[in-house]
Image (tube, rainbow, N blue to C red; front, side):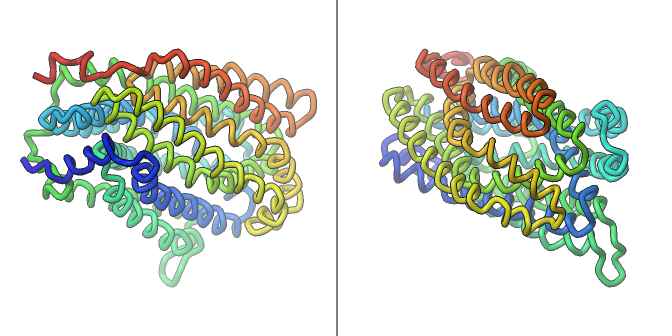
Amino acid sequence: MNHKEPEKLRERIITGSIVETLLKLSYPLIFINLIHVIYNLTDTFWLGKLGRAAVSAPTISWPIIWTIMSLGMGFSVAGFAFISQYAGAGKWDQVKRNIGNLFSILFIFSLIFAILTIIFAPYILKLLGTPKDTYKGALTYLRVMFAGIPFSFGGFAFSFSLRALGDTATPTKINSVGIILNMILDPILILGLGPIPKMGVLGAAIATIFSSTVATLLGFRLIFAGKVGIKFSLHDFKPDWKLFKKYFTVGLPASIGQSLNSFGFVVLMGIVSHFGSVAIAAYGIGQRIINLIFTVSDGISQAMATMVGQNIGAKNFKRTAQIVKKSLLINIVFISVPALVIFLLRNSIYGLFIKDILVIKEGSLFYTYFLISMPFFGIFAIYTQVLRTAGKTKESMALGLVRLWGLRVPLAYFLSIIVGSRGIWIGMSISNIFGAFISYLWYQKGTWKESLVDEHSSSSS
């Protein structure tokens, strides 16, 4: 088995310049995040041609979708922690074993999730009090998206595995193909072209699922062809139930935490829904623009996770702390500057996507109260990322639940009763600010200074 390329990546991560390595790992991730945000904006742009109900359908659906996706994401987090730390320790047989089983466990659970969510989609939407003008489109969108969950989970396994090894370029290339294909298909399927009928929201969902399926299949082809530095066979994907148990130990808190957090956004969307499709559309468009801020921030955070995981595996705790400090400073700068620009241009930005004056006015309120908290969310994201990568998923879960369920949801609900929809935006902002301070105090406890390689040494012999 040829480990030349993974070894070269490991050497750079363990001993190379922190800032230079961080930026090299970040560039592909920033690029794919940017492409993904541009896709979301494109999706919103074309759906905006059909009116606020069409824009609102995916907006109200995505928190539900991410609640389910987060179950798979939690196990991906566990896989990333094990793979990156074993790579940092130079234990390549364990790296291969963990990658194979990450694919297996995600495939098994994705089939179960797909069936259950397709059945219960109508009940979830009714429970949320989805507006009548949005319900039909949201149900269609949800069911098509849920049918593609197995391929989405496969994409998680591919991306998380390679990122853990320090290869951020390959998953970026593969995912870019899927996203660009999606952007091409969107206007064709949403608005119709030639013999292809106008499908609206259904077309947006079909374009997304078809494109993600193509990307996942391309990833599988690279895995089996040995193009990722490690060659696999079907035998490597045979479920190892003892390893599955370890993934449950580390991954279940992450899955529960991320699912409860995602469900918190479902509840938050329910609060927004009480103010009608104007508030939903303003929130949906606003969030997509805010995601532009995180194209750089998320890329840095994800690159930092690779460096943190491998350095913890190599027991370089002092270097790990330096990586976190430098990542934090870079992150704050790259969030603050674009947040200020978006605030100054907020009305013009909304006007690009929708001409509804009520939506533009509500969007201006959203940005006025929320953007100030974005640097604080960047701080929160960095510290919780460190805990997840260290395998301290119970701690990261606790922090996430405090920020969302302890602060954001109750504040948004009660403040919205007092001052209307602006209370939701104020509550969201306060939760980010307090979440940052709490995560900083938790990071200072130093519980992340333990290696999974030591904790699970019996499996690495």
